[in-house]
Image: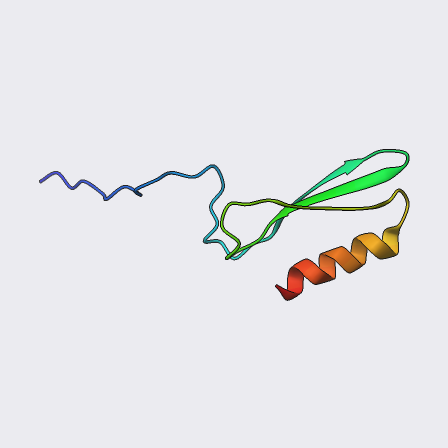
Length: 68
């Protein structure tokens, strides 16, 4: 007997049902760009920036993402 599994209606590049926060960093000498994709936020990436070397600002942004 052959069993066919149901496929998702619209495949996505990133699984958003994992309850995970995906973060990318673009580091330059003057600005650090932080992009993120959070659960429940759809597939829209958020963008924020902090001054290069601002570790406290980076950690603050991570804490904000965790709260959402």
